[in-house]
Image (cartoon, rainbow, N blue to C red):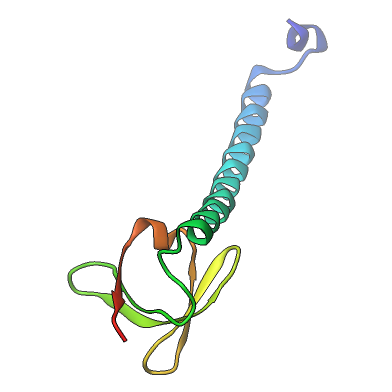
Length: 105
C-alpha cells in the first residue's frame, strides 16, 4: 500500500528487495563461517583431540593425506609444520569435520 501511495514502481521494488536479500545472505554465510571456526576452537580447547607438538595426519581422502606437527592452535586457525618444513594454516573446523590420525612418537 505504501509503495502505491509513494508511487514506487514494482520492478524497482523487486530489484531493491533482491539486492538487500543477496547482501543479507552473503553476510549470514560469512557469519556462519566465523562462528563455525570459533565453535570449533572451543571444542578443540575442551576436548583436546589435538595438542601442541602432536604429529598428525589429516585424512582428506583416499589419495591425499596431510602430515605434520601441530605448532600453534589459535582462535580461528591451527598451524601445522610439515616434514618438508612448510607451514600450513588450517581453519579450526577442519579438525572437527575431517578424520585425524595421531602418529605415535
